[in-house]
Image 1: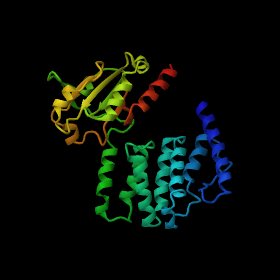
Image 2: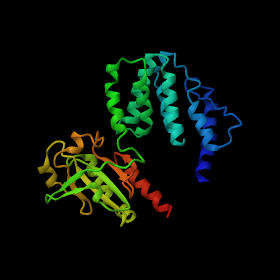
Image 3: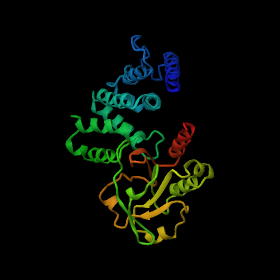
Image 4: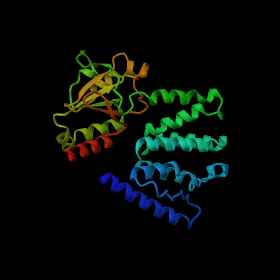
Length: 302
């Protein structure tokens, strides 16, 4: 019920903003006239997402040079999709790319813009689930020669690995004492895979957040944290000298199999996966904020 009420509130705010935007044409105004026959809140959000770009002129290539209009409209679109059911959000991304196929200039612009916002690990809008339909559109597009699809194809292959809801790929890791274990040997309600490098600033920040008393109280007895150095740069000496919180299971990939075999997409350090008791992926992130939020919500629901 709370979610439905939030949907309804967002729809009301969204329509009000669109009405205000009509007075100032320098700001993009999406269609807001939802058909009256659509009564379900989620369905109304889906309709808004699907028709968000209905007033946008994809044939006007000059708009790619107007970030206050086009890029801002895209950012607001992504913010809105945060309230939309996942399937509807993915369909909305697909619809956007289909509409952009009217010309190469607009298609290229939106391809690069979506990559920046959805695929960059540093982006606050990072969402590979929404980037996948974009990649599929790029690969199937007749606007691009095949050679330009090589990189998107590889991105798609990597994005489809260890997705949310999938069972995470098992791997072997080595402890400081030389003993070998499988990730699936870890038995806990939740498992946190903390792929890190010893000299990574973001990794130090993540370790500090893991050590916070409030976080430790929330995860006590239900979370196993595996800090895994991928050994991609062969700097084991530094890894051995680096301090890690004592409650972490601290290991490394002896033969760098995870990187060399591309078992996981480790484009940034740290890369963090939260798994459930069956080792299914709950979330993938590049910092601890999303993890903290998850456990705050998990605690509130108890």
